[in-house]
Image 1 (cartoon, rainbow, N blue to C red):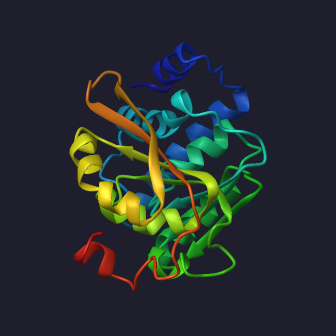
Image 2: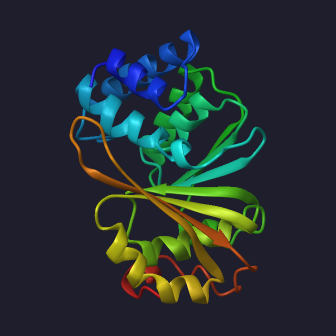
Length: 237
């Protein structure tokens, strides 16, 4: 997907990008490729791949979910900033935070935010399990996002403790989403959450299946969750 094709496909979804936003996506692509030469951020470095498999895929959450100005979003394990930075470009009035366990990636994100002149962004170097027990962040966010981080039963334990009661966890998944949702039923019960919606679509051009799953938090998370680092992955709920 070329930059022009990206602009056209986004327009088909009812989103008209401004010149500033187009420039920000272009600079994002350039910085990603520059930094990828010195650290492993992504296996995808062609313009076509980055625009379709990272940028378009990231903003696809907004095709099915209404983001509102002033909402606080945290992205768990965002890596090179997906999906939260593309969403921030699209909706500049969102307050976006990212937590990631690799210090080098946080350095990249801080540089990226400066290059893109983004305000209202925060980056935290921490394990999601530890971060979710931090009173300054626990149950402080309207929305938690995660894209291609771990299977749903694990993600639920990492993400839901950060969501406010009544807020949403948005999981961005591929074709395995249906099976993962089935496996995660117990985790949702334990964590007092329920699936609000599961939207399926095909990523343009490559035609691969994608799911945008929205999980609503119904009650405060029990204090024991998330468990200590490594445990959710080894012993999913």
